[in-house]
Amino acid sequence: MESTKVLKIHDLARGGSGVSRDSEGRVIFVPYTAPGDSVRVQVVEENKRYAEATLLEVLEPSPLRQVPRCPAFTVCGGCQWQHIPYDYQWKIKSQGVLHALQRVQVEPPQAVDWIHADRVWEYRNRVQLRGFQDQLGFFQAGTKSLVPVDRCDLARPEINQNWDAVRKAGVRLSRPYKVELEVTQDGQLTETWNAGHSARGFRQVHDDQNEKLRKWIFDQLPESEVLLDLFGGSGNLSLPLVEKVGRIHCVDLSVPRERAPQLPSHFEFHRSAVLPWLLKQKVVKNLWPNGREIVAPQGNVGVSAILDPPRIGLGSDFLAIAQALEGLGAQVLVSVGCDPDAWSKDISRWVKRGWRLEKVMVIDLFPQTAHVESVGFLTRFV
Ligand SMILES: C[S@@+](CC[C@H](N)C(=O)[O-])C[C@H]1O[C@@H](n2cnc3c(N)ncnc32)[C@H](O)[C@@H]1O
Image 1 (cartoon, rainbow, N blue to C red):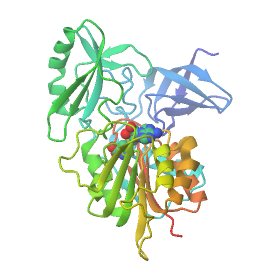
Image 2: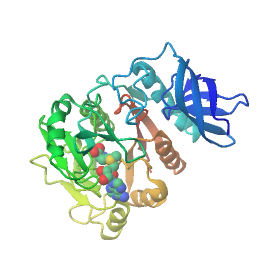
Image 3: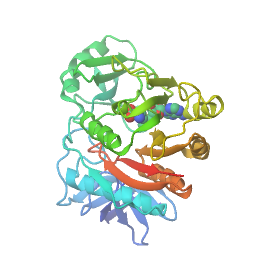
């Protein structure tokens, strides 16, 4: 294997890396580079079709570059794109979702809403930090080595203002620790020390963007008798719809986070895995109060669903979930995904089953990173 190469970066991949080609025409991905950079790299992995390299030196920087705000950028691994101006980040993200749909032969609908972020720094309402002795920071991506930092430019100011106090509290502990700092909806900072993964349940990290996501879903979903909020967390996406639907069933593996104080009686939370829960509904038909099946009045929707699974999408459960939902009479659904490829794959499977992709929304919940959220509104009127 050749040790180092000099390359010109000519593109930015939606996964986050800069893209070049070697003399044989093979694609090489180089993280933390920008189109127009001349760089010296070390190839670290290669196969017939592409190679991956690490950046050793920027020989000539692209005019596109901006100065990253964080001194730990490229070391901590949390952000991929602090060196890329936000407008360009957004361009790559939006093109990326269309590309992912095209790869699975889904024609994007006419109606696509593009919702970029206005707040592109200091937006994260929670961070998970690691510490030992007088050091506090993040684990380097894919490793357990601590990168000490004294602030995070993605974190909300309330978090950064308390950074030093948390570090001092950590010094008193004799072992390495984990602490999650979170700004609650009412602006209070909470600290959770050494809790297990997802101990406090899931919460979208960008509050402003989350409000836009909730509104978009509210606007798409028609009135229905029953709404199934699957992988629903604490009902973040379905709670705004309480006035529009007769009954909401929110299903999630994790514990609900702090909940709205007065949840209406027609919102029910079920702590369960989605598939077994759905299969059980088919048998006991207890989705609706009196055990009857939904027969929606002409022109009305009986069952609607929101599906917001983890990164991998519905994966191998897709078929069973789709059959169960169709068996329950679902006619409209919203599919949310944070990985454009996994989400597009699910969308293509819905379309192959006869669902119609009416509308798509692409929203940036994670500025400075290559992540993007995609949402599809699908219907099946039989
Ligand atoms: C992307 S989050 C979406 C949460 C919610 N829709 C929101 O906006 O806050 C995915 C959720 O899926 C849950 N989850 C993961 N696997 C699950 C499964 N097999 N069954 C039910 N919930 C699951 C996680 O606990 C997490 O809350």
